Image 1 (cartoon, rainbow over the protein chains, first blue to last red):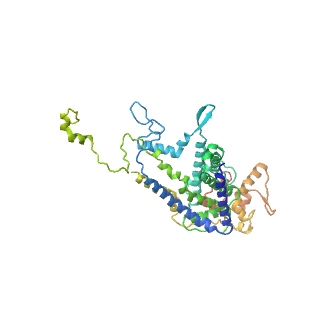
Image 2: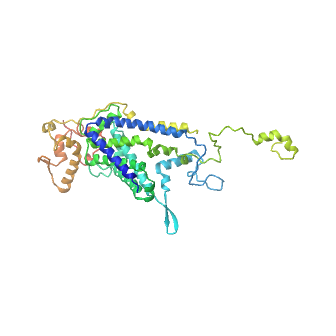
Image 3: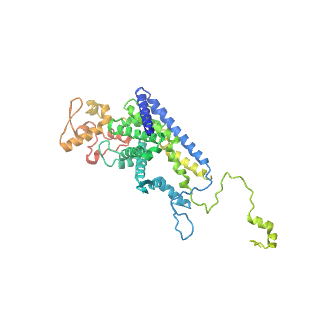
Length: 331
Length: 128
């Protein structure tokens, strides 16, 4: 039995209760100012530190796990995007990977069909992932309305599109529903599929529960147990403009739970699998052109070896070689 | 590896984009808007429900009013303390809050909310 998800769920519930209790007993400044600032600081320092650490790792040779024909003889058709030899090809491959999750699109499931083994093309993971990531992206952009004044055009335009269904008031944002749905489906995948469940650890469940917690508290505050949005923006604008303050009333404890969850998530990113946000740009199997045969890649930690080329060898022994009737390249 | 330069450029872009709210505001403190009340609204002292409730739930009330009036033809709204009102945006709400620009728009603009009331309703001429 995999109890990792129970621990993670419990951890998120306890953390939520801590923030709730903190807001009730009057620690709003801690959960509304100190922790968010600390979280942002940890995020930036941790993120940059992690990427610089990765940048130091030597990549002596092109790692060419590819999904297409390498460029070779003229009459063999190469695959310029799946197995690129040029920078342009690499950029296209990276864009497709980052924007369309092409690796997940190739997901297969191994199954025994009676005696025979089958590799089935399974798109669910790709679908849930793309739903989840793009919803989260839209939700984050939408939330910028709380952090900038005046609100720029692109944010209000996005809100109009996101709210185009005009269901209820305040109008339903599609991205909120699909974010919660996507995260829940990704969680169910880990809990219900035995093979995925077997390889899932607390570090896989915790961020999912945390994000579900964020989505739930956010949805509650918008549609069900409402907060005074103007007061909320007063607080968040204080943070964004470095004039922090806690508004007198109108901001409920639920808001501090939401903010605490977000702070935790932001601070957690550099130390967890969520670092794939920066890591995807540094995937050696995706961002290196397969030009091993065209360019010489020298391993940076090789010791300096004194070499003696054939030309030099021939230079040294040409006369003797001629006498012994050994063919030479230069007369 | 020779890509360190590229990675650092990437990091600089990352930090610049992700700190957008911090540099967009230039660190300038902003004042939360205070919607202005007309004389009539001040005299009435109370909206159809308590102020704190109205601040959070007015959109829900309007949504319910629209449904009960347009779909069920019921114009009567009884508030929490038993007082009766006519459910009407144009006749009840705007009777007091006849200053859209200084009342409605103030918070809506601040919170980037664009209500679609005025897609159908026309706003009467503003008067203080």
